[in-house]
Amino acid sequence: MNYSIALVPGDGIGPEVIAPATEVLDAVGDRYGHVFNYVELEAGGAAIDSTGEPLPAATLEAATQCDALLLGAVGGPRWENLPGHLRPERALLGLRAALEVYANLRPAVLLPQLRSACPLKDEVLSASNHEGRAAFDLLIVRELTGGLYFGKRGRLEEESDGHRPGAAFDTETYSWREIERVLRRAYAAAALRRKKLCVVDKANVLESSRYWREVTAAVSGDYPEIETSFMYVDNCAMQLIRGPGQFDVIVTSNLFGDILSDEASVLTGSIGMLPSASLGDIVGGRPRGMYEPIHGSAPDIAGQDIANPLGTILSAAMMLRYSFGLEAEALAVEDAVGAVLDSGYRTRDIAARSAAGGEKIVGTQAMGKAVVELLETTRNF
Image (tube, rainbow, N blue to C red; front, side, top):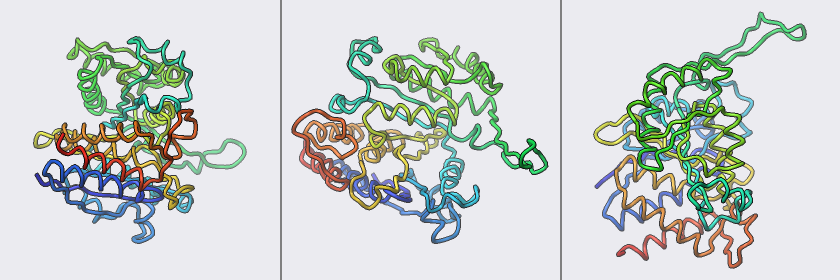
């Protein structure tokens, strides 16, 4: 089979982590008889430098014509003083809106090989996990194309607080359809996992959160086998530290999901380990998808060959699974990552707190190469 993939390397470490991910995909193609055709596109700061805008029309058009999109990272301090509509991050919002990918799936799994990199104590992990495991496996489903990030915003120059004139505002607005569709995506994910779904909100304060609860009450009846619960976002932030094992699937708004998924990433050992899939409606049997690691552009380590590429490689595995329906291929990539970690390979971010012996501290390229070699040597298994 042939598949077209829009590649957006972006800024900072983005190009460095995209390169090994494509090498892994090529190894998968060789092993299983697929051809992945890459269309490299500019977005973010790189696009600003070359075209003056974060998301050129040509990039947007090409991205919508591909089967899926794999993105590295965008942004950096060199563009942070630009006006809001010209910031690199606007490219992400524009791509998400154009591709209509409204559900962001962010798994947070503590792999046993990285237990020593988790900042939580053993007794905390064990006490919080009701199934007797010494690790956790949760999924945060974040609404991605609505809420505060896409609401009406602006400045009110005529306002004054008695000091300097002016005020600023951002508005969170959610429609029934926007909430319902991401809830159904979360329920579908919970049905394939441990059948527990927690809606995270701030319903004691926000009207939009109370509306989320109304929609959930209506939708949950279609999923009687799923245990549905609610939790305020501030309590959820605390409970992720006190006992992450209590969670299966968390579904929440754009803003809350952005924050909570970054918090959860620290518990896995490194933000560099976490992939994500942004999915839209089913078209032609598969959802349109945009895939990216959840780490940022990390300009402070860009060009040093020390960034962790595993989050991007695992994002490519999610692309194989969700956009292309290639479950065996996705599992092969995930198994190869696990085998590489079993062999002791570590990038600097996942070795910093590790007490285990026999570690091999490697760079970005070497870590990617190790995954590729595992895929190549096990191609007949």
